[in-house]
Length: 162
Image (cartoon, rainbow, N blue to C red; front, top):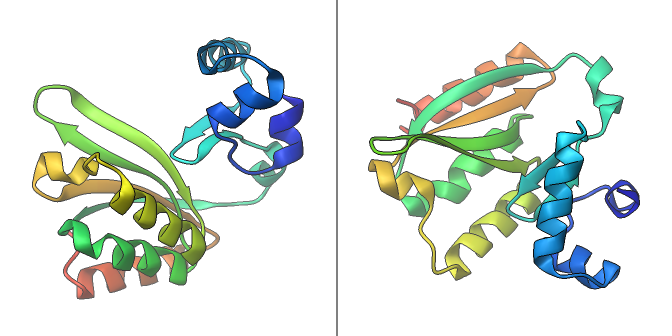
């Protein structure tokens, strides 16, 4: 917990394991135990992140957008969201066999978006939207409804919104 608190950004499980002198599996098990004790630890594609409570007093507006696009448009979609003041919380798909699959992303700015897309390109894995013909959902948080309205209008204009 001290490492997650001090870091203030996602920490990869392997990094935690090295710093603590334990295996990656021990980190996974300990994170599960901490979550069971109601610690607010989020797993992201960049690592584990402690959800801090200081933002809880601040009013945030949330909207879920249903989008569809080809994989090569991912960066444009993400940049559109963050350029209009959105913070992308997750990606979610409805899978015919498994039901709802949700993954925390935590993309707050263009740098986060670029890093995610670069990681996606260098990975041997396919993004979730490949499983659904491009259709997926994003939970987006913003400081005002107006920000969310701008995001919605721009996604619609670009043909990403379903």
